[in-house]
Picture 1 (spheres, rainbow, N blue to C red):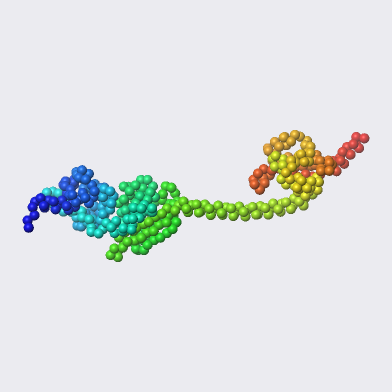
Picture 2 (cartoon, rainbow, N blue to C red):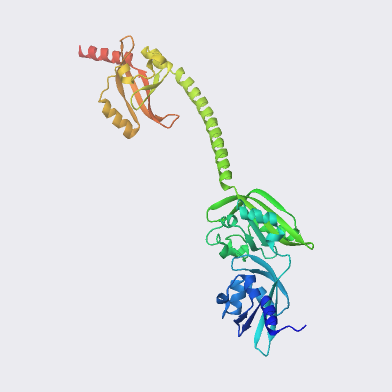
Length: 388
C-alpha cells in the first residue's frame, strides 16, 4: 500500500512535535498545539528555551538534559495550567540545520483520570487540594481554595503551578511543614496532623488540619496529595476562651486572697479604740469600725451611706473645699475638728485624712479619729485658771 504525500504530511502533523531552526520555532504540528493548548501565533519565532522553560514550565536543568539524553520523562503545563506527563526526545537534522523535538503524552498518565475522587474534591473547592511531585516538591495541580491560603502573588495559579513550593512560599525551607512533606516523599507513609502550626505567611501564625497521602507506582512514591483546611480562627477562639478562663480563675484567687486580707484588716481595725471610717470622694461613708460606733453612738448600719460631715456635723478649722484640694495635692491632711455624737454631745477630735485605693482601684479617704475632748477641756480649764 502506497501512502500519498498528503497522507504522510497529515499523519506527521497529527504527531506532537515542534521544529526549531537557529533556536527559533519554525514549524509546529497540530498534535503539539492540541497537547499544549497554545496557538501558532503564540509559539512561532519564539526562542527554544522560552517555549520549554517559560511556556511549558519545564525546569532549566531538565531542559538541559533533553539536549544530552534521549526520551526524557517530565511534566509540562499547558496554557490552561493543566499538567501532563510526557516523554521528550530531540532529533537533529544536520542537512536542514534544524532540531525536531517530539513531545508525546504518556498513556494513562492524566491525573483527573487516575484520581477521579480527588478530581471531584478539586472541583467542589470546599477543601484545599494539591498534588506534588515528591522529589522536587513541584506543585503539579491545586484548586483555588488551596492557593488562597498563600500570600500574594503565590495565591494565583499562574505564579505557582509548575514551581517547587520552596520557590513561591516564603519561609518554607527549614519549616516543620517541609520536613513533614519530605518525610512522606521519602518513606511513603501518610501524615495526618490537626491544628498544625505554620508561621510563614504575612498574616502571622496559622493553624491547619492537613493530610498528606503518598501515591506509589512500582514501589516508589509517584505523587503526594495534600488536603488542607485552615482552622486558625477556631484555634485562636479556643485559646482566647481558655486564656479568659485562666484569667478569671486567677482573678478569683486574687479576690479570695484580697477578701481574706480585707477581713483580717477589718478585724484589726475593729480592735482599735480609735474611730476609723472611710468615705468616697463624694463624702459617702463606705466603712465604719467598732471604734467609730462606740465613739459616736451610730451603728455600722446607720452610718454606711451617709455623708460623713453631715452625719457628724463636722466643724473644720478651714473650708472643706480647701481640705479636698490638699488631699488631692498631698494625699493626706492632719488637723483638729469638732464632731457631734448621736446623743448631741460634742467631741474634740484629732484627725488624719489619708487618700487610699480600695479593692476596685478607686480613691477613697480613710479617716482616723482620736478623741481629745478631755485633754482639750483640761487645757481650757488650765488656761482659764491662769487668766484668773
